[in-house]
Length: 222
Image (cartoon, helix red, strand yellow):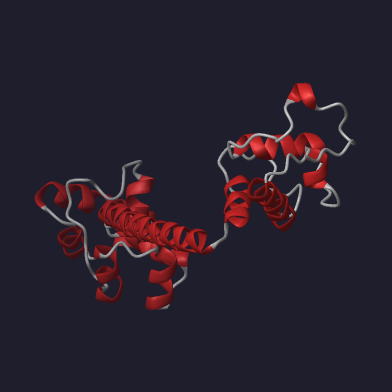
């Protein structure tokens, strides 16, 4: 048994310089790629040698190599486990080619995905602009504040309460009333300091100036 193995090793080393592909080496030695891999490992040599062309011996797998298909999917399509499909690529010198194709397929998918995301984002922006244009002034201001980039805590108070806050502000503008911040937030569960922040974020000012405000809870009306 040992003599037979040694003879095979010598045969492999003898024909190796004269072949250009794994297929030729298999034919010259009468051994399969998986067996040759074991002999090369025993001889402490790298399998497969880089200079040898890959051996495409299973068309049902090789076609998927060129498309960069995932090894799990290759195994399912060819009736193999993922591990066996991966092993086949290594044994037949196809792993490098598969990896290159896989990378290209991945990059292509990323380009497609990026394009889809960009188009989706553009569509969402247009839809948002359409919805925004359909809102009344208080709702627009509430939207502007609630979804503004500078907003850090978006869930602290309902957007409906903020819209009502701006509705009161708008009414005061229309009817010429100088309402205090306390009047604007009465019953809305919006803190006084938050109300000031809301106005500041949408570039509006309180009706009562700082020097005129004699107390947060006092109501001001003209």
